[in-house]
Structure formats: C-alpha cells, structure tokens
Length: 143
Image (cartoon, rainbow, N blue to C red; front, side, top):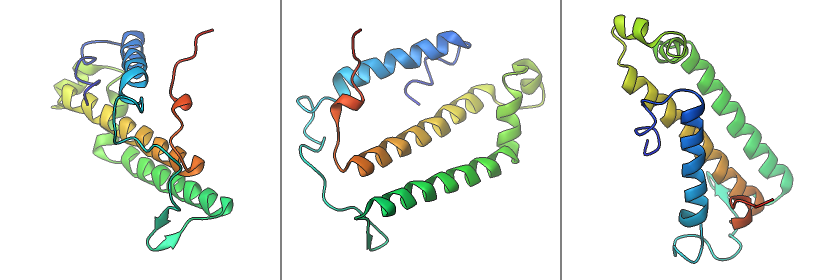
C-alpha cells in the first residue's frame, strides 16, 4: 500500500520503475541486518504448522505446494467475483469502469495489496525453504 499510493497516477512502465526503485531502497536499508534487530541473525529453528514439524525437504515441498494450491484457488475465486471483474476491467478503460460506479483508486490499491500479500507470502516461504534469512537474496548486485 505504501508503494501503491504514489503510483496511482502513473501508468505502465512508470509504475514498474517506481516499485523497482522502492525494492532497491528496501534491499539497501530495510532488509539489512545491521540496521534492524528484528531480522534473524542465525539459522531458524524447525518450523511447525498446526503442531506438525516441517523437518524434511519433502515436507517443505509439500508446504510450498499446498500454499501454491491455496493461492491459486483464492485467485480463481477472486477472478470470478465482482472484485476480479473490476480488476480485469481497469486496464482496458478506467473511465468506463468509473462510469459503472467502480472506485478506481480503491480498486488499484486492492490490486497492489493482493500482489503485495502474495509476494510477502513467497518471501516467508523462501525463509522457510532456506531455514534462515539470506541477505544476498535481496541485495542488488552491480555488473
């Protein structure tokens, strides 16, 4: 949502560049261990879900596959809802969507929130797969 509000007036490539700039700033400051104490310093303990410990690679794979299936099912349900129809209609013609009573700003922020939630979920699964936070996964490398 923090990135979505400034990009509301931007279209296409400008919105992509704005989110890329935010990701560079986040990887250079927000995700650096020396800056924040809440970032885990060492390897994480064995994760558990609903009382079941996830110890083997196959269990981690099954967890990631289960999350993927849940996300795809949720997106399928979203696609066939009113919100999904609104989100599909916005890129085609925002004025026509607004004419049907759609709040364009709210719909765009909803799209940002949904995509941000899925990206955050993927980041959490990456930490579970690696069993530690690896800063190098998020840092920008110069060529």
